[in-house]
Structure formats: structure tokens, C-alpha cells
Length: 320
Image (cartoon, rainbow, N blue to C red; front, side, top):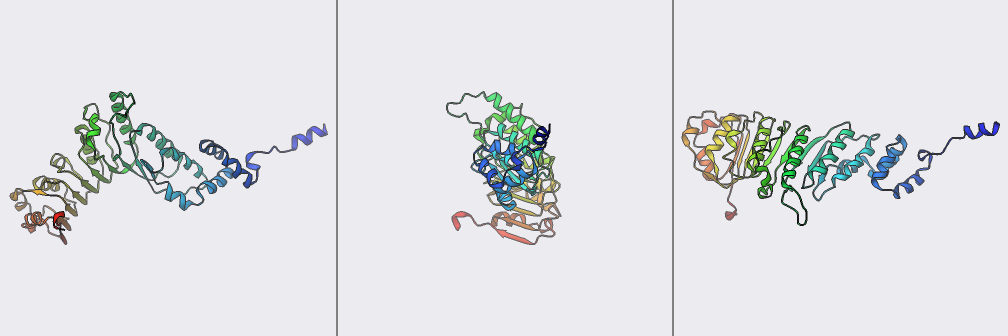
């Protein structure tokens, strides 16, 4: 009986009881997924592995802010489960989605559900393509529905920045009218390239439902600018090669909070009566950057810019 009590009182040895040096040796021998699962068992294991894997909170914050494309893969988001003890707040995370968007968004969802502080989120579609991969059989209709579900998922998250793909030809699937997910409502900064019609319709609706402060348009924008009402907009940059000043003037009549205007491409003639009759059309405008011809047209009516402070002349590339 005494012998049994001695054995019963002897504490079993667990991973948490092992010396740090031995724990590190064990961690070297197991996969990352197994490592994450093991260190979530108790506080001590987590503390040791956090220091081993990230070294410092500064390294964590520097290396775990951008995911996708050629950067850190989405699968490494699981490493953030090592932070449940040492909880440095990652203030910003950028996700660059590619054709593997369906798998990637699951990793994002899982990660955000496991951390207490949700950072500012930024989404980039610049590498997104629906072009069929060589040797891969894929139903294009299924891909369209997957992307629609994907956009419905991201509409529930607080994305601040969105940049679209410059290769609209690889996104022709989004010309289908079935593509109509809920709009994004938390956008602050947008960069737009030409997009398929129904995808662009969704983007316009998302902007009108968000407090967008900065908008960059890389095409003429005549089709979308009159449809935008952005009551918090302060910065607008257009790189279109032949931007209509009429469209720009109508756009600003809907968005009087604009403070800076940058027209870096060419512009087509404007209806001067629109500016002539628009006393205070740009009541908050403090900075304008455009070609000499465009500036000459705009500034012919100074009453439209009551508080303008800075004017910058854009020189064509062939003159530089």
C-alpha cells in the first residue's frame, strides 16, 4: 500500500516540464502545423516557442504584415497562434489574393478569429486572374461562384484599402450579371484599373457605401465618376490619358470635400459654362496638379477655387 502511494504521488513528466534546450530540440523535429498545435497546450510552451520562432515582437510585427503573391504565404498565418500569450498588436495586414483566393480566405478567417485585436486590413487584387491554368480542368462557372462567395466573405471584414488588377482581360468571368455580392462598407483608399462591368458596378457600390478618403483612377473614368458620391473624399488622382474635365467637374460637384486634385494624364476640353457658373465649385480645394493646358482651363475661373494654395504644372514625359 505504501509503495502504491509513492507511485501515485510521483508527478508524471509532460512536455511543459522539460528543460528549454530539450524543448527547442523537439520543436526542430516536428512540422510547423504540429508545432503550433503543441505550443497552444499551455502558457510556458507558448512563451518558449514564441521567443524561438519570432525572436522578438519587433520581428513579428515586421514580417507578418504582408501575405500572398511572392511574399509570406497565407499558410503562415497559423503562426500567429503563437501570440496568445505575448500579444503584440499587429496594426496592419495586407493580403494579396491570387487565383488561390478560396483557400487563402479560409486562412485569413481562421487567423482573424484567433486574435483579439483586428488590425487595419488591406486587400490587393493586382495578381488576381481567372485565366485557365495549363493542364488544369476547371469549370469557369464554379470559379465565378467561388469568387462571388469570396467577395461576400470579405464584405464582412473591415478592409481599409483595395487595389484592383490591371489585367481586366483575365477577369472576363466577372462580366456575368450573377456577380452581385454585398458591398464593402469600410474602404478608405481605392486604386482602380479598368474592370469588367459587373465587377466595376460592385466596386462603385462599395465606394458609395464607404467613407473613401483617397481615390486613384488609372483610366479616363468618364463612366464611373458621375456615379460616385464620396462625402469624405479628400484626395483624387487620375492617370487617364484623355480624362474628361466635364466628368471631373460633375464628380466634384457631388464631392465638395476634395482638397487635392492630381490629373496626371491628358484631358479633353471642358464645358466652360459648368465652371463659370460654379462659384465655389471646389470649396475645399487647396492643391491642384495638372498639365499647363488643363490648369489654364480650370484657373480661368478663380471663383471656383476660393482657398486654393498650391498649383503644380505637370510636364509631359517627352519634355523631360
